[in-house]
Length: 284
Image (cartoon, rainbow, N blue to C red):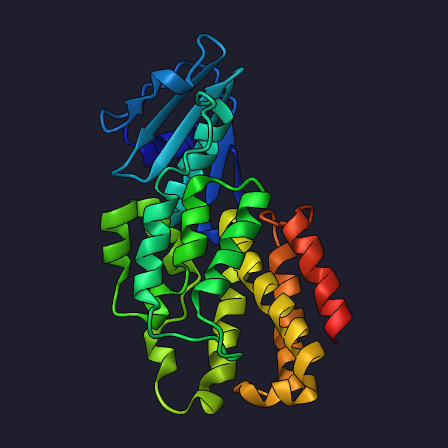
C-alpha cells in the first residue's frame, strides 16, 4: 500500500503547522506495513512503545507510539531537515555542543566580509560576532550558531548558499538561506524597494520554523542594540544613514515582533525575543 493510501485509510486528523508542515494522525486497529522507501530508525526507536521511520524520497517521518500513528509530511525540504533535527533532539543520544569549527567559520566570514563596513563605520564582522554570541547564550545548536556568523554571506559577498553547504553542511546552508532577502528584490534604488524587501521577510519569518525565527531575532536584536548605542553617541542624525525614515523602521521592527510570535513555532519564551521586545519598546 502506498503511503498516501495509508494516510487516507488510517489517519482521521490532519494538523497544519508552520512552514507547510502537515501532521496526519490516527489510531489504527491493525498493524500497518510501510512502503520499502521508509527506513526504520533503530537509534530513535524504543520497542515496543515507539517506532520511527523516515523517507527522504517522500520527505516524511512516521512515528508509531502507544497505538498512535503519525505521519509528518513536509512541504519544503528545509523544514524536513529541521524536523529531523527536532526529532533527533527528542529521541537521539544527547551530545555535547560541538563548536570546534567555530574558528574556521569566523575566519571564513571575516574574509567574506573583508570589504564590508557597518553604517557606523565599524568592521562588519563585529555584527556577526554579536549575533553568534547571542545564539551561544541562548544555548542554540552549533549549526544555528554557525549560521549566525554566516547569515549575511549570501547577501553581502560573492559566496553562495552552495558554498556554505559544501563547507558547513546542508542544515547551516538552509538556515542562512531562510533569512536571506531574494536577490530579485534588491534591484533598483534601495529607498524604493526597501519596504518590499521587508514585507517579504516579515511574511517569510512568520511562516518559519522556530530555529529560523531565533536566528532572525538574534540578528534584529544585535541591530537594534547597535542602533540604540549609535543614537546615544551621535543623536537623531543616525536615522539619515538608513534607506527608510524612523517611522518606517518602527513599523518594521514592530512587525517582526509579531512575526516571531505568530503560529505554533513561536519563540516568545526565549531570552532573545524578550530582550528584543524590550529594545523595541525602548527605542520607539
